[in-house]
Amino acid sequence: MKKVVFLVAAIIALGLSSCSSISHTSTTVPVETTVSSLSKADLQVSQKKIRFEYKPSKAVRRCGEKKVIETAVAEALKANGNADVLVAFQYEIKKKSNLFGRKTIKYVIVEGYPATYTNITPIHCKK
Image (cartoon, rainbow, N blue to C red):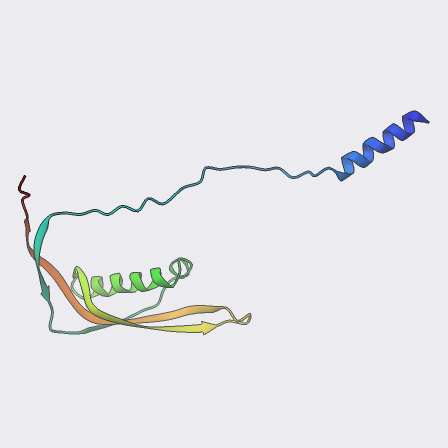
């Protein structure tokens, strides 16, 4: 009888115990750094305003709206003469709702003036 009670108690104890495991991985902390250079440059801004429509891929859409806009600007610069920056740019985002109410970005229209850096010269520090 004692063995049966002990066996039943052991089975109940095993049944109530959890079978989950905990795994820890290392966590990362973003380090806010800036890269600075003591250089002087001229900015040549084009007089022609460009307009570019960008249809993001699924991989780009997963990164968020901010990254979609950044990618649209980069693709617009690449398609229009490979400029360095887009000055005074504006964007328009077209979103579409799916069956569950979740919105996805269909396309982004970017407008602005492409510009390139010229005459880059280093500035020497006085000590």
